[in-house]
Image (tube, one colour):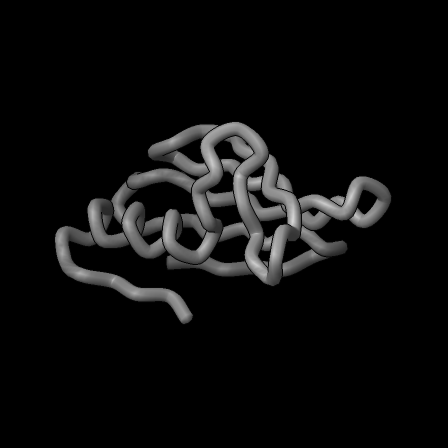
Amino acid sequence: MDISLSNGVLTIILPNKKGTYVINRQIPTKQIWFSSPLSGPKRFNHIAGLWRCNRTDDEIIQLMSIELSKIFCKKMKIH
């Protein structure tokens, strides 16, 4: 896995060509833009202390835990 942070953009390149996550903070809109190899692009708003998707109401940490568990075929939990 290759992880880099540059100019507010976090890029996570998964091993074995499993895809890339791009997580980008958008300061003017107070959002996090998230691109996933599994669920595609999403935008998250900060609501009641959590980052929630503006379309699905998914919480970003929970979503990443679920997706990484699927990708690596083992239970993963992000804190």
